[in-house]
Length: 130
Image (cartoon, rainbow, N blue to C red; front, side):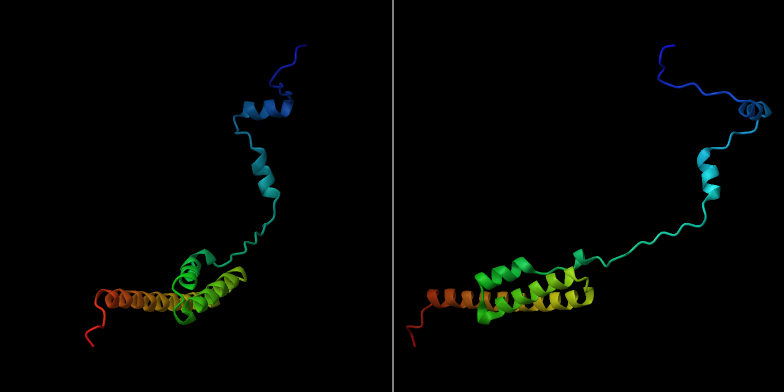
């Protein structure tokens, strides 16, 4: 006999009697589902730390280029603290340090920008009149 791709079902008297009676044949997974007892699933939910911004690149820029009164260094230190707290899943601490890093970055950028503007003003209009 030649091999076939689909093996033929063995016919038994039970299957013939069920089909002949007109009752629908029960699926195997339904029978298995009845034997299962209440399974429990444990899902561990961690806080989403990707939403906390650490302002790391802004802190690097302020530290390297606009380090006004070491405010860029302080902002960089707080940015690194944010990253550490995100790894430890301390979401509240990471948010607080992110606010502090943002404050130091804004202050450093504003003071450095105002100093640069003052330098350009004094270069354009020198104080030779005084």
